[in-house]
Length: 371
Ligand SMILES: Cc1ncc(COP(=O)(O)O)c(C=O)c1O
Image (cartoon, rainbow, N blue to C red; front, side):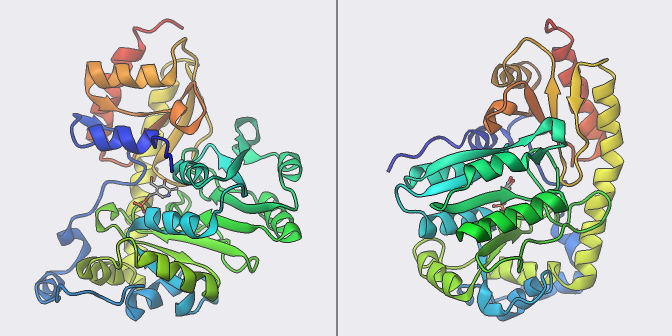
């Protein structure tokens, strides 16, 4: 099996912990244990046995996950090492060579790479900038066929931060149902909405819907490596047998901490913290973008600590990002990594002093490039 380089993850792996300023992150600045737990809970941590836990997630954790959705039972939930493991297991268990897959673009490219590696024929469904990063539903009608096996969406979307309109959502469900295609929706940014209105999950909208979630983005806990998937019970049972071949289970500490993070009151506070960071930093980033007098065009993100901007400069996005990295030790994500050149993704979830210092450095590079 040949697998292509996952370009964005690769540059992040190489540079995110090495550069002076990392603006490639799509979540908010992570919490530490003291911020997550009360002192007596930290003490309790020292008594957690470091054994194998229930490998599909402890019932207590799955119970807390189940509260985020309407009508789901615990057998329809599987806990994984990050939402990326959930995505991997789903692709591994669903895709056969020759399958037809529709993939929303721009998008987090994990499932793009995996679907292609497992031999699927992948057809892009483009979100359109001029439509506020919504899909053109006529495009979807043309793409979907009776042999479409799977449609993959990320909602709220990465890198645009856009949320699918009710009209788009209903039409996608209707068309998937018409041909019996699976609908896989990565909802890892759900809960990171700037206006505090949680995106309606696709869960329950159709019997072949699978949704993925996790603690990395909206909750500011990527280092826990905690994700989950929801699907029909027989599919989840099947995927559990695939899970036996990967990580078996998440760590006992992760399961314990995730269970606490998802307790209703703590969860509310975590999401509030995220929203405050987003709403404090976004105006600042927007002001910075506007200070370049028409150099950037963008649609303000509805969710997530990411802003995807088009720039009007005669330089390829990978070259631009490499230049900023080499000259100023700041890491951004080029549009090329989402198959859309002439764009940059800015992560704006860090603290404001850090963000400002990083943007000052980026500005120094931009000012030297010809329009
Ligand atoms: C849409 C999407 N899915 C999954 C992931 C991976 O996240 P996790 O840390 O939950 O594995 C990311 C990370 O950027 C993402 O943007």
